[in-house]
Length: 166
Ligand SMILES: [Zn+2]
Image 1 (tube, rainbow, N blue to C red):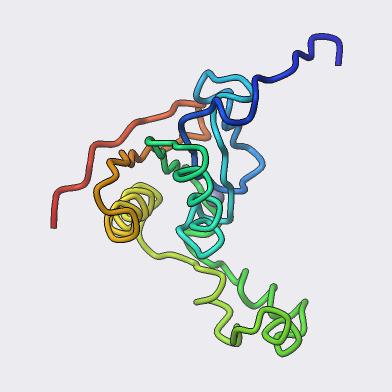
Image 2 (cartoon, rainbow, N blue to C red):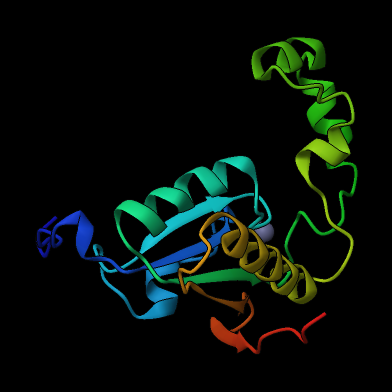
């Protein structure tokens, strides 16, 4: 690429973004950042999964990140299955997949992680969950977890306040 520039060393990023795999989300552009300035973790539905935590642990410990932003987005396909779980289970051998994963994924709806509340509540809830997990596994380390909602309609990133303490 003509205007390509070598990003800074990997360790210079001090923040992490967790967002959805939705191809319409441009993580760097929506934050006004360049390659090398933030770690990006993506999965369907911007969810706290085992693999999210695996990647996060690298960012929070080795890379010493102290800020995490969970970004949900409007019109997320994970909000209501719309038959997606049947399409997934219809296209794969669920027993073979369970064997590969060493985990029973017969309840595809649960395994895929479809969620019922709106995107806003989901992102805030996942941020809430992450705060609790970090507090438990990294006691004494101050990690600030924010949440935001990306609006596909106009490209707006809406920062959300901390959910009320429960
Ligand atoms: Zn999504």
